[in-house]
Image 1 (cartoon, rainbow, N blue to C red):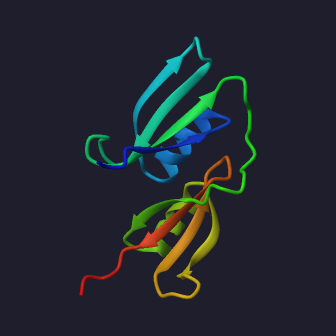
Image 2: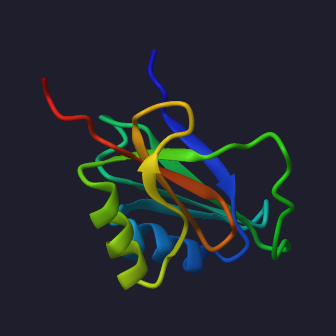
Length: 130
């Protein structure tokens, strides 16, 4: 078994595709309209779906926004350097909601950014090889 994808519902599909591809550097892997269901699915990721888990962005055509809810936490992305990754997000017009630094009660360097719908993406800095 392996993890295939995580699905999140988005209010404006193109805005979300632009964020994940232009701000976070993912690729649009595929996009499919389902007219009878009035929704579109777009899959974005850093590599092919056959190799890694990806994000499924679901846009229900008749819904412009969603309440966040209390159950969803965040999507985590490993980065080489959290400071540089956050600088890139800012340069590309993205929002950094927690600047890089050690996690609370630990030493792992993390940061958080938010996508246009308010979903949190955690940057986890890769630990140096020992």
